[in-house]
Length: 402
Ligand SMILES: [Zn+2]
Image (cartoon, rainbow, N blue to C red):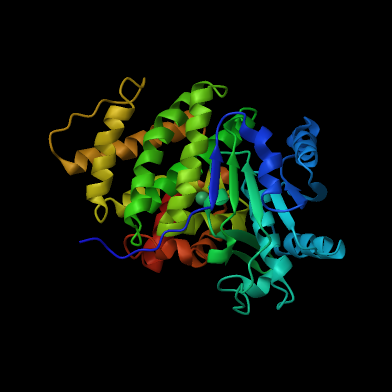
């Protein structure tokens, strides 16, 4: 018997190496004036942003540079960008183009929604769990996103993650209306990513694929996307740990990240993402690194309740990673326990190859922060974890990992 389900996805996905040259006609399908939100200053310095703006202009669209976002967006960043956009006068046929990693895309998503939903004073009024509970009622400005990292999957989700440090929170602005209209994925844009960003974003995608797969809200279509994503992502991340310029691995990661976004938008996440948000707020740990460090604990906590899926993943890893140097071969004697242990070994080895520290103390977390981190790990992500984790167990897990 199949569970009833809804499935959300971007209206249009355009995927392929070098396809950023199509941005002009794609933007014109959304509007005649594009507000540009971009990330990384490298993209500005190496001329990529200018090149993309020229392509949009050649197609007949005007462009307005709205914001450069180089860290995870905060409430004040969203409010300021919305104010700037509105000060230019909102017109019919306006749209927004986001070019960057998760931070730039999340900022852009929030801006598109806040520009047309003016019944609050700040984006904070709309955030889950901390605001006034206001809802997004009017359709956001149409949004085209071009991810330049391969990890967060936010190009395909219906939420934007917004932080605050005083008071400390990291919460979502969420609405079914916020799924981007067009997602243009050109994996070539990820080739210049440095090693640490490649590692952290890639492990974020893998964590999302595993957590969505075993989420208590898992659904049939996203589960298939997770299997496809993991088949691509695990071998690709081993490859990228050796060679950052490998085209096939970059393509595989861009596709896997996109699939992870579609999966998590529909199925939710779990323990690692719950804690990762809290690590971001209390210890300013970048999202992907936090996920990478927490994934081994999430596997350990869920190994019994999600045994069938994790054992299947272990058996598939055996085939996908056949011949990978340094991975102990796993003899399938039918024991699910051994197959799950193989998944844990694969993730541990991969983290090691990518230089991800195994302990919280190595990523800037102090022991005194642990109770507060445990306390604010609750929320939409933790609710998706396939089993309940008590406050005591959560804190004990963090202490053990510290
Ligand atoms: Zn994530």
